[in-house]
Amino acid sequence: MEFVPGPDLEVAREHLGLGDDYRPRHLSPSSSNLYQQCPRKWRHRYVDRLPDPPGVPALVGTFAHLVLEHLLQRPEGQRSQDQAKLLARTLWPEFEREPDYQALGLNDAGAKDFRWQAWIAIAGLWALEDPDATQVHATEHEVQVDISGVPFRGIIDRVDVRDEGLVVSDYKSGKAPAERFRHRPLKQVLLYAAALQAHTGQLPIGARLLYLGQRTLGVRVTPSNIGAATEELAGTWQALNDDCASGTFEASTGPLCAWCPFLAECPEGQAEVRARDAAGNVRADAPGLAVIYAEAG
Ligand code: SF4
Figure 1: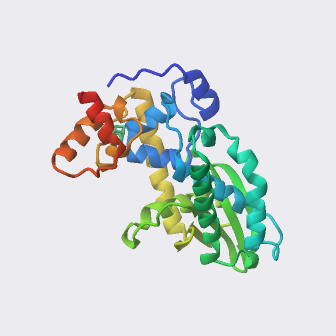
Figure 2: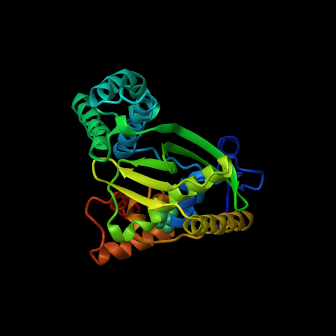
Figure 3: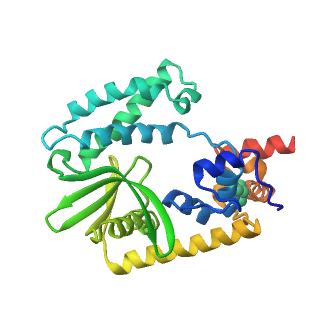
């Protein structure tokens, strides 16, 4: 496919750090994950800037993160569920004025359900740990460092202090992966650990994903597992830069095409969804079905 920059490229350059040749100036874990998932999808989001508004699950997670960020900034002993409820009430009026939330167009019942889902996620922290017994070093800690030649940028949800050293934690409000798939999501927190090491000179001892209300996925940080994560990051960075230079951005088709927000722009993805649907391999609630039937009709 021909590489044609979208009309908002100037805005994209300014906000996302794209250089004159569309190369990003930095790489975050989410951008890296997206590129690994599908280079074409990366291009649609970061270069073409096609709309991909967050849905209810993503915004529920955003609000839960916000409340937990403020709660864990409080001193130990002041992080009860009652205090979390008070914080949620205080933060809600500003959050509900956000354009992304307004774009959901929820009625009163929908808004009530949204707040309930957010509270379930927030309260889910107590199923994993006692926030009052946590010694917090930082929340929403922004790191911008060079890792293995990659200009890395990320925001770490929480850095805790233990007797033996620092622990990096990231909250997740989505479904926890099965044990056999734990490896991939943990790479994100291993990269945060690598970034923290580059920033402070101190190797964190642990990296954790807190799947709120479900379970904690944790790993002891070692030079070996950090090395593997950073090596992969460097490979992704190289491939991404090569694609930016050539404008290739291959379409990596698969089951997720049926859920891709850019399916209408992607002939390869549409062919994939049609083939999977013909074989009975697409869930009835996949939004991609409406896209391919609209294209056909
Ligand atoms: S539809 Fe599939 S191949 Fe196309 S951009 Fe989306 S994920 Fe990639």
